[in-house]
Every structure is written in C-alpha cells, then in structure tokens.
Length: 411
Ligand code: CMC
Image (cartoon, rainbow, N blue to C red; front, top):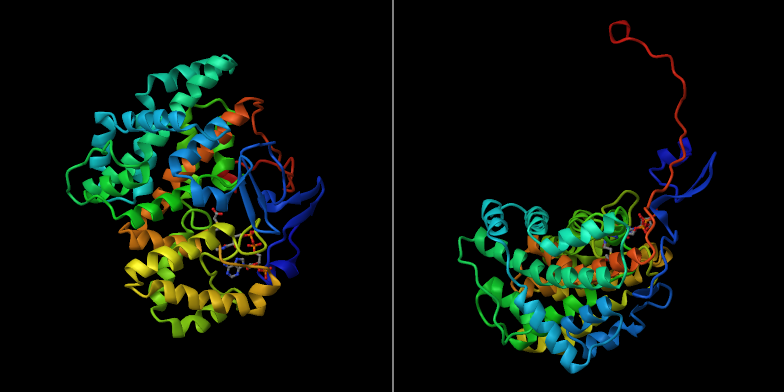
C-alpha cells in the first residue's frame, strides 16, 4: 500500500507490496500475449514490424505496404500491393447515416466524432455482423480469418475519410471523394484540403503513417485487446482503442507538444521551460519520456532527419517551431534530471510540427495517429483471436469487509 511518506512526497509507487503479493502498477513489464507483429528494444532504441526495422520501412515502404505487412504478416508483391490499394480505394466510402452523424457533430472535437461515426458505420457493415455471430459461436477458423481481414481492410479505408469529412463539414465545405491516381497518404491530404499535395508533404504524411502503424502493446492496443477478447465486433474494438488513444498521456501528446512550442515562442526560452519541467511537481514536458524507450525513440530520430534533409530545405521553418523544439531538445539531452531518469524525445516531440506544417489543425493530430495505428490495432486483435481467452485480471481488495449496514434514516 502507499505509505504516508510516499503520498506526502507526491510520488507514486510502481510496484505495490500487497497482501496478494507484488502488484505492478501501470502493468509495467507485464506480458499479456505472444506476438509476431512488432517488437521494441527500449535499451537500444530499435522498433521492428514483423521483423523489419522501422528505419528500413521508413526508407522504402509506403503506408499501404506497411499496413499489408502488419495484417498479412509479410511484404506484398507488386501485384498484391496494387490489389490491396484498389480494395482500400473501393472501400473509402461511408453510409449516409454516418455522414449525417458527422454533419451533426461538425465542430466538436474530432475524436468524439470519430468514435460515434465508426460505431455507427459498424452497424451497417453486414460482414462485421456476420463475423461477430461466428465469434459468438466460438468459430475462428480459416473462413472467419478471411472475413476478419476483409473487415479490417474496410476499417483502414474508412478511417481517413471519417476524419477528412469531419474536418470539411466542420468548415461548411463539401465533402470530397478520394482520387484513384493518388496514394493513400496523398489522398488523406487531398480529401481534407481539396488540393493535390506537394510530393514532400505526401512523403511527410506517408512517413507519419508508417511510423505510427504499430507499437507493441500501448494503452490503446491493450484496450482494443480487452474488447476483442470478449468477441465484440471489429468496429467496437477500434472504437475502444480510439477512446484510449484520446488521452494526453498517449495519443494527445503531439498536440500538447505543439501547444508548448507555440507558447514558448522563442528558442531562447527553452532553458526555462526545461528547468520548470525538471522541478518536483513541475509540468511534464510533452513529447519526452517513454515507458519502454530508455534512449532516443527511433521514430523521433527518423522524423528529425526528414525535417533536416527533406522538409526544411524546401519549406524552411515558417513558424520557427523546429528551432524552438531543437533548442528544447538540446536542453533536455543535457539536463541531469532527464539524463538520470533516461527521458528522451519520443515520436510526439516532432510529429506535431510535421502535421502542423502539413496544414493539419491541432485537434486532428490524434485522429491522424488513429488513421495510422488502426492497422496495428487490427493486426493485434486478429492475432489474439487465434488463441483467444477473455482478458479478466484480478484486483487485490484491501477495503473493509462485513460492515454492519445502517439504514438510511439512522446514518
Ligand atoms: N517531463 C518531466 N518529467 C517526466 C516526464 C516528462 N515528460 N516523463 C516522465 N517524467 C518523470 C516522472 O515525473 C518520474 O519522475 P520521478 O521518478 O521523480 O517520480 C519519472 O520521470 C518516471 O515517470 P513515470 O510517470 O513513472 O513514467 P511512465 O513510464 O509511467 O510514463 C509517459 C511514461 C510517456 C506517460 C511519461 O514519460 C509522460 O508523461 N511523458 C509526456 C507525455 C508523452 O510524451 N506521451 C507520449 C508517449 S509516446 C507515445 C507512443 O509511443 O505512442
């Protein structure tokens, strides 16, 4: 249990000694499944998807190829990739009910709109319902796996359209259909802005999507697994994941990081901001620290390099955000507080600036994260179903027992 001394210092225990034995708070280092989808070496700063290093995928793969790899377990041939792209494109549509929900929810935070729209869309996907029925009867063999992949592809296709159409409807603009000649990443920017994006902007979006597509078992993937393990339907699995992603300790961090750079406004103030975060009970520096990485997040390194090699030479740093973030990064890397705790910039440290420069408003950052991560969530749910067991942990009860019940008028 938490000691009074601990509570006074405002610290939190990580492993609680309880009458039932040690309890790892935050499930730190608790293993919930075996997987061949992704792996992280937090000490060396390496991330693999299906055995391929993230830096190789970032260099050579598009998001479509990455999503295929995550779902099917191997890289596609050129023909398979073309077919996959065609299927995604053909599924990028929404039911009229979903569109009217998006219209009604124009102007609200897009994560709420996404959750509602996706839940509604699931009700109109007959294969989603059919799969749910089969799962209820305990069936998950080759036919159901095939069906699950079909539904998964549709979810990957629909998510960016939900986000982009909510963006347009919130601005009283007509919705735009994706174009067959554009890649998945280019189409996202196109259906939002209505303009064909610059190739470097498309590359930036593709990179963002590839880097966020999976990350072992963060809170949102765990939440998705909890719902999947009850044999709920696939749309509900993703709605659950969206709800978990929405929190500022997870998907919301890039939004918070960008807000911080804008507030700081000047690289000369970086030192003060980092000093404040290093004080006891100081505000946490968004985009810094990670449960697994004890070194520089490899995804952050890839984004940083993209800025310096490709983005800045063509577009510069119009709002000065890259230089503010670079100054904060320098202070963090040299500060004993961050060094001792091994806290380094994570992917969100840079991704907010990238999205901002691509014209994505701040409240759409987490939705964009979801547009990418949906591939990972689905891959994990499908993998879990191959050996499903309902996720049902225990709690160690430390409250009183058998209290004498006092009637309400006598209390
Ligand atoms: N700024 C200042 N101090 C920090 C920070 C930070 N960003 N992150 C952790 N710390 C301190 C924390 O106060 C604690 O100090 P002490 O030992 O003195 O109590 C120590 O570092 C360990 O922190 P923790 O809360 O036990 O670490 P955690 O593994 O539970 O939390 C985290 C990980 C990512 C939630 C946390 O680092 C954080 O809040 N970071 C800022 C938000 C953020 O950037 N989130 C995005 C994460 S990456 C998303 C992804 O991979 O998809």
